[in-house]
Structures are given as C-alpha cells and as structure tokens.
Image (cartoon, rainbow, N blue to C red; front, side):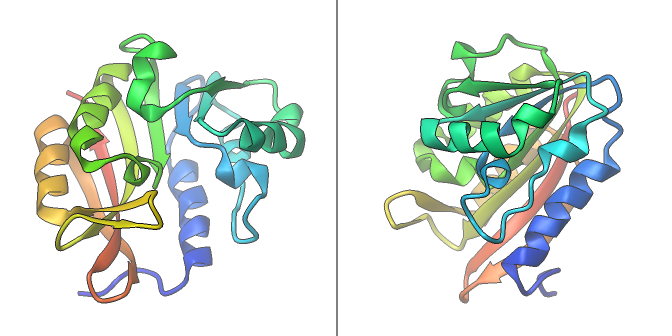
Length: 192
C-alpha cells in the first residue's frame, strides 16, 4: 500500500475535489482555518469558493493576519461566508451544537496538543447535525511527535480508534507521506 499522492500540491487539489464531491446546496458548513484562502502559501488553493452553493460557510481562524489576507483575497467576493476568530479547541465559544451539515478540517486538527485531540473530535461531533459529515485530514505517525512547536503527528492507531468511536467512517485514505513514518490521512465520517 502506498500514498495516493507524492506532492503536497496534489493534496491541495484533492482538498478541492473532496469539497466538490459533497452536495453543499443549501447546507451550513464549517471550514477550519483560512490558510488556503489567504494565499500565504504558494501551493495553497482556495477551497471556500467551491462551497458557493452552501447556504452559509463559516470559517474559523486563530490568526488575525490570516483572516485579513483571506478576507481581501477570497471572502470579499462571497456573500455566504462568515469568518470567526477562534480556535478549534474552543468551538463552544463560536458555535452551538447541531449547527453544521458539513465540517471540513484539512490538517488544522494536527496543530493542537494530543491531549486535546479527543475533546476536539467530540466537539466536532457535537456541532454536526445528525447525518452531518466530517471531512478530516490529519497527520499521523507511529508515535506522537511534535515538529517546529506546532505540527503534531498523532499515533495512527489511536487516531483511528477515536474517529471510529465517534463517527461512521465511509472513507479512510492515505494521501501523502513525509519521511518513513509520517503519513497524511483523510477520513470521511458521518454523525449518527
């Protein structure tokens, strides 16, 4: 078994395809972070414009500078996008339970400490409506690792166990490798 992609840029294209495959018409969406929409990375591809059929798209971002750049580059052109300053570790500060039809977390969750992972996944589940879908991309490894003080690599087995305990998983796909043991995984899960 090998990763679906060899290059980061191809993964960003896949992020767009994941969003395009979902029926977002008249749905309420949460997209964690605004990095793709801000243009701060050359390889980033804005994903929110693909969500134009959604009733509302809420973007959650911790970095106010990223919010300003995303607002200028992407969000000012879209009427259905609302940006909240906040953290995925504190979703209760921004959103009530059973709000979203879809949550898209494209490798935001792997920037929180491991001890907050399960609580954040539970919060995602709480914020989804019954039948709601999470599209989650997360870095894993054989063991817990931290790189550059903010990139976490979570133990794959523990990630699998947590996600499968909370959601009915209908897609589990290895997207990319970084070194021998670091792997980027995509999960698509449904809240029952």
